[in-house]
Amino acid sequence: MRNATRKNPISPEPVPSFTGSYGQGILYPKMRARNIKPGFFLNSKLSEVPALTRILFIGLWCLADRRGRLEDDPKRIKGGVLPYDEYDTSLGLAQLHEQGLIERYAKNGNHYIQIVKFEKHQYPHHREPESVIPAPHKPRALPSPAHLNPDVLNPESPILNPEEKKIIKEKFSVPKPEEVTAYAKTIGFVLNGGAFCDHYESNGWKVGRVPMTSWKAAVRTWKHKDREDHRGTNVRQNVSVYGPIAREALRNRQAQGLRKVSESAIGKVLDGLRNQSVDQTDGSTPERGESER
Image (cartoon, rainbow, N blue to C red; front, top):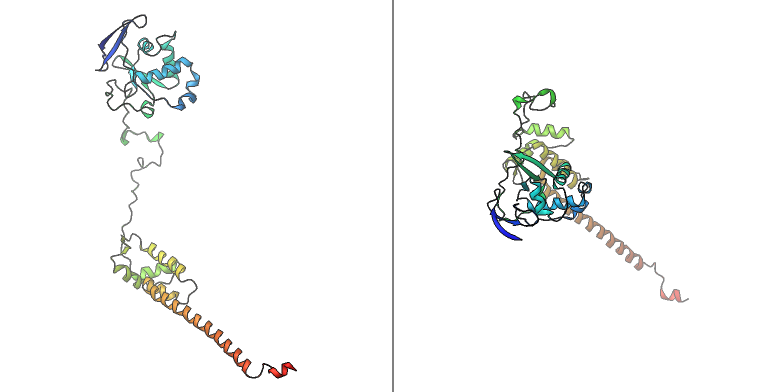
């Protein structure tokens, strides 16, 4: 067999040409290394085609360019993939096309093949040249709203109802003290609106370091914190009025109360011990001589 090198009309790279018992005078495109995944052997679509057609499908990967395209030339494909088998390549390509594994199409009078989902499963070498074969089809541009048919579209679509106004997020506005007090009443919370406004006005109406977006949410937060921190105390109303400003004083007061309780309990124990010692010294204990008798 004699080897030679010719120019491929599709790719600028030189490709080998063979002259012999198989494929005499046919140009064989350059075969490239591709990946084969385990899912190939379990593919339900491939189970519908003969075994040699599955091998043909793998061979198409190696013949295709980096975009998964190649010339639709059954004789040339057979010479590159199955040169030693009696096999109808045209029938095999038709079977693969019917199963949706390849797409056969024509552009400018030439016939091509596009391997479906090729770029999803294959990772061509970065030096592999770009495809010179045109894509099967260009994505069609969506029609403008003026050309839409309202009879076949959702009547509630905003495109068909331009009179509907877009929802605009409300901007934050500083509340008045009476507004804060009134809203707190609606959620069962006693709050001094003036103290609330003074507290946030002093730090530029920010919650931490973030600008406030809803003062009503801040009121609800005060209510939740008041319940968690001061449940069962007799100073809830004072905390509600002054908010975080009074909490530190409340904690100190509670700590002092615990200390008073502890001192009271210790005092009771000491009083009990004193009473016991008095009972023992006032004659309640029998003398030694009496016990010996």
